[in-house]
Image (tube, one colour):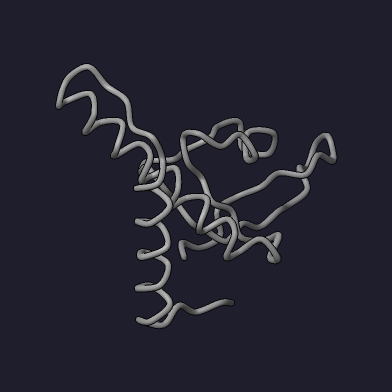
Length: 106
């Protein structure tokens, strides 16, 4: 399992901030602009986590804007804006179908 050091976290957040600030943010009001900034931040941060864990098929990153988990889990996001977790799989008893489950939060 990949463990993030304090320096890794700082680097990840700095990269995310730089990338999110580079995105053009549109809106007709301060509220709309701030909402769009927040959405951009979440989108970029989730993508940064996906990039960091791309070599590990057991790690999944759930977020609203990404559909990569929809086939296995039937949804894009869980309770929070971003969830990084390790998944497991088990075969169903009746139809021999592979079922995925959240094994541990990362």
